[in-house]
Image (cartoon, rainbow over all chains, first blue to last red; front, side, top):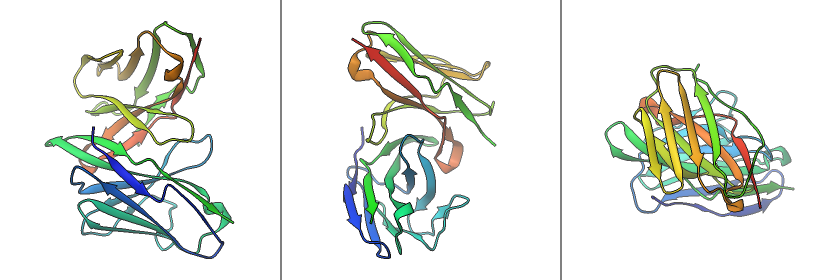
Length: 118
Length: 111
């Protein structure tokens, strides 16, 4: 299967600072990437859909000014958590769609980034 | 609003048995379904996808799709303790490529 990487795999930051997380599709081009957040013992929650060359589409309740998403190329999307607070501590996971044939795709997840805000 | 429902479990089976995981979906027009496995503290990994009615087999895994009854299932033959994880049944949302999540079923395979 296709490979999606994330960097960093874990990060600790102080409250009020910003953190950038990178998501890369290593062996395929991804016009669409997704950002999720997962709290302990809960299911993944989709935060936003990131499309190359255009603004991200945020899910209801997700603050777009706090979670800045940039999809600068077909293999790279970044999520910046601005002015982080302890309640932003979570497991952030990105994913990317690999289209096999038109209207047919497989979605591959990155390994995740564990963010701890102190 | 599309929905995917799974029994959260835990489903407990002895080693070597067949584990049967099920999910139902609400949108009769849904076309694509995915089974992912997620170990605690890790991100989901794709096991299988299925688009057509019937069965699809890959090694010890068989996915079944019944569009008339609107359910999807995953059978795991010869279950191993390493199969213990949360299994996510996901529905693909057409052109957007978004995945509709069920709650996931926790599987425990006991040696």
